[in-house]
Image (cartoon, rainbow, N blue to C red):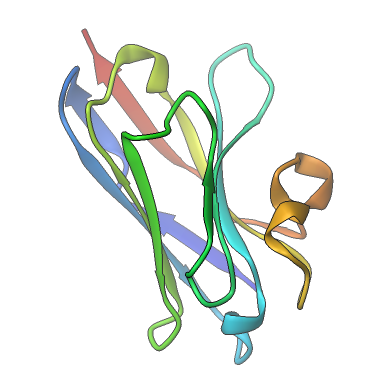
Length: 126
């Protein structure tokens, strides 16, 4: 599956942004989807994941309660709604997918990601 992310930008601390990811492929609903991020000088880290149906989600502790991942299988899209942003959220955000028909847990780490989008920059000013 090919992924195209959008929606990044500059926002003040406390603000909100919504990232969107458009995926190509006829079997989008067979892939767990997620988001990773990479801050300057740091390794890529898991942010959020969502199961095939959208019924199961999982978040990194650092974003739990502030970020919400969702998907629309009819439109082949996955979104990340981010609220209460703080400067520590500044990073390049990547839309990702796992391998076809694999469970959500497989994309909690970089090793389990099959496809990466090109990344979109999110900058939170203090």
